[in-house]
Length: 597
Ligand code: AGP
Image 1: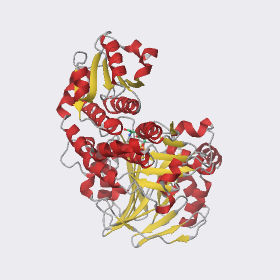
Image 2: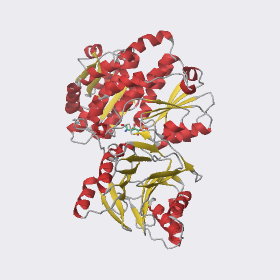
Image 3: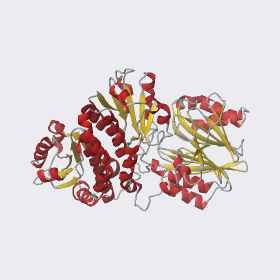
Image 4: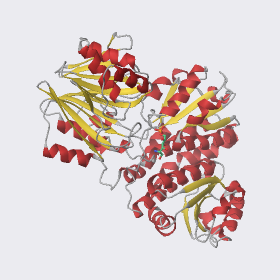
């Protein structure tokens, strides 16, 4: 997703802008640019491609100025190109924008009728034209900015400059995150606190509909009604070293190896009676919905299995982007649980707003506690994973699964709960043991998956959610076409894809379903498929004549095994990506947080 940075600095703003943009690279982008305001003029540099192209422009012809804005663009309207890159400049104004202006077409037509000439295919450019037009009508900069925002429909985070206010930077947020930071050397704005990790000492998150004017002395915030808002800045929690790779080759590798300590934090997150959420809400619910996108949805899918199996509560996982349009029958006696690492995923936020409109109580499980989702939900639980920079979710998925397993256990029948609780509490140690199997997973990836043009993943129950997660990771960072399927579905279609040497990753702890998994493996081997098994010691022994490769993870029971196997599946995909010389931190076309529907 796009990234925004802005600064009013002591001296030159460019070093901060470029450092901030480089910290936002993990969000995914395909062009970048900066604009500097100095002595009554605005200078801009933009480039298609990654930041190295922009750096070369700046090296050859560095703009100067203490006030500047910068942007990394992930193309929505208009192809990746220099002319579609932000900042957009019209007359004496420059803007950068995250989000989608839903009435952009209508605004563009109206502005064209008044003589506006558009130079890009983007919806964002209308913001610069509107700001310029209201200034040309004689409005003061702050009022012109306010009128511009009033004209926009849709989600946006905006930072803007104008020669009419040479000492100011304007910012606004509506359903797209924006933080303001202050530090010893300047005042800053960014779409992600990570961009300010080294400079800002305190932060304020703009709420929906708020706008701000920043000067070197500080900032003022107005709400949607134009009233001044007093906000207490929060201490910057993020240290710049957390934004580094800690000596690893990739953020993804670093975050995989952080999983055991993150899991220990997730196990310690208080799930109490605070602010009204209690286990009774789950136990008494008519239906629990687990809602999310991508990997977060898979965590919810596993949770629905545990909630029904362990607690006997009716539960279903739904893909957030489908849920709102499906017309699900909802009741105020339901409970909607939203799973999201970023807390900013547009489809999940829309599903949450839909549940709010329907009067359904909402619980958010997020990794970013100041996120929009955390602010909107009735209750919020932090998964405690710590910052995750790699686009592919790793430790955050494991922590999501742990929190969801704990929710299921908090209402589980006593007979089911005791053993499961022991399995959960031993997870940090077992996750550490799983990490020690990295070499076996690397060999499985190198020998069987990386050379293939297709991989099938199979699992049952919560293991099916792991199969989906493994296939997603294989697609998103190794770019190998892959599917995750319930093992019981194999003979209803996917088996047609099994040819000589087709790798099939089977997620199968040695449990009550293992005999059925063994039958599936026989059918695959009979057609020349190469079985790559994620299991435990007993499972490996029971299938050694069938498998090409198997990794025996620690036994961890009904609730622990899927969590361990999810880590193994993530490591498998990581090794595939590295074997194929892809950068797992910045997979093509993908973004860390999808803030547009
Ligand atoms: C998973 O590797 C992907 N990064 C993606 O599927 C992600 O899980 C999904 O976009 C949801 O993001 P969220 O958890 O921030 O809502």
